[in-house]
Image 1 (cartoon, rainbow, N blue to C red):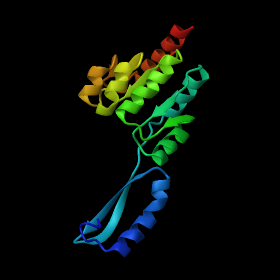
Image 2: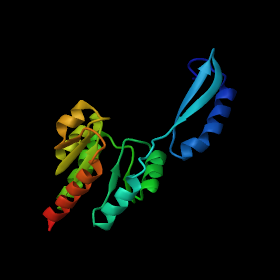
Image 3: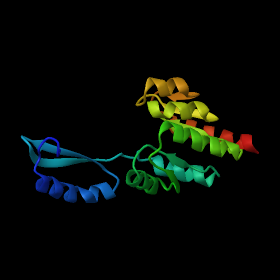
Image 4: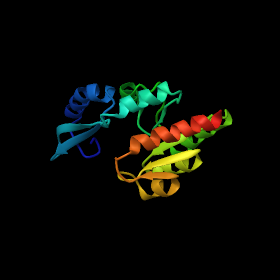
Length: 171
């Protein structure tokens, strides 16, 4: 915005207004028209209605959910809080996700990875079970995964069954 000649005071005002949304974990897109600050758009991830209950059920079964995400810290914490996930690693690059999975596996913990993007593909391949969200994800993630969910029907059961099988395998 500064490089495009948008007035600095107007830009600073707009950034101050958007700060609340940033703290809530939103991604902000600033808008200018004819080199004048015009506003901003706050984007945030939406959580499927049944997600929190699924995470709670997995936790009750002894499965430890972990959030590995490329999102910034505020966005990751916001999502994790809503889902009742206590272990969060934000700002992860693909190699960071691989390293976290390797660390869990070194502790002889089985890993079920769920992902949908190109950045998730290496981690999906490394995990003991990789599940790709095929309907919304990239083809590379689908190719790397052991299981590809092509639509929402039954996806919760597949995830729970995979997690339970990994838990059973450990014993």
